[in-house]
Image (cartoon, rainbow, N blue to C red):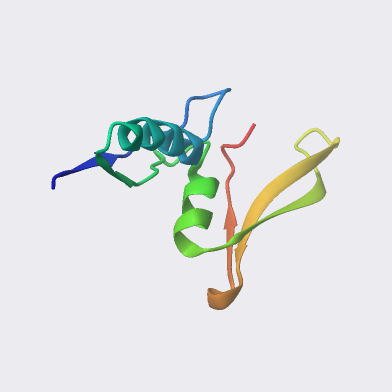
Length: 92
């Protein structure tokens, strides 16, 4: 049986690419077809989520000082097995 590759980017302001993949794949599977999920990101917002999924990492957050001196919450990822930190500077 043929498979359908589902490889979307995020829908900015609404759904992460992981969620879009799941929703589209559910519709495909409901029709008795096979779906392969492969969430993507273009290097901007959403890249952290895709990398954490692929590398089996964990999302972290930390209160930091922003560019104008204000306190902001920064999201970042940690892949313990590789001792790898991922910082997404495109996040809003």
